[in-house]
Length: 258
Image (cartoon, rainbow, N blue to C red; front, side, top):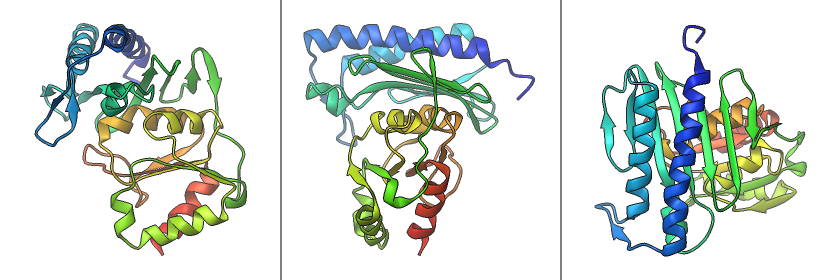
C-alpha cells in the first residue's frame, strides 16, 4: 500500500461524512416521507441527498476511484480503487426516531479494505481508521478490550435471522450461556463498542458489505479480528460477520464450525 497515500483519502471521507451528517440532521429534525424499495427496505430523501453530497466530495478528491453506493449503485469499475458508501445505514431506525443509524464510507484498494469512516451524528460518535494508522474515536486512539475467555466476554448480536435456521444457532446459544453478558446493540453501535473495548464479540448473519466495510477497518486497526462467520476475508459479496478480540474470535470460529 506504500504507493497509495491514504491521508488525503481519509480527509475526504471524513469531510464527506460530515456533509452527510448535515443532510441527515436536517431531515431528522423536520421528518421525512418513507418509500419502500423493491426489496421492501425503506428509503428516504435523506438517504439519497446524503449519498449525493458524499459522492460530490469523494469524486473531487479522488477522481480515479469508482464509487459503489447504497442508493445509486456502482459508478466506474470495482477492480481498482473503490469507495463503498452507505449514506444512511439504519434507515429503519432513522424513520422510527431511534439514533442507531450512521454514515459508512470505506475505501477498497485492489480488493483490500484500507480505510473507513463511521459517522453516527445523533448517537454522537465518529470513528475512523486506515491501514497501519490505528483506530480513532473523535480524535482519541482506541483499542479492543482485554477479554481472553468466553466467561469474560460481552457478546452482541445484530441481524441473525438466517442464523436461527441452521445448526450454528445451538452453538450461539452455548456461547451465550458461557459468556459474561449478552447484548444486541446492532448496526454501527456494537462495532464502535468492540473497537473501544465495550464489547468483545459481534455476530451477524444478515448484512451487506456496505454496512460493515468501514467498520471492519476500524475494528482491525483497534486490534480486533473481522471476518465473515466462516472466517473468510470480506469481499463485495460478504453477507455475515464474526468480529472480536483475537482469542474470542478464534474460539467462536471453532464453536460455529462444529
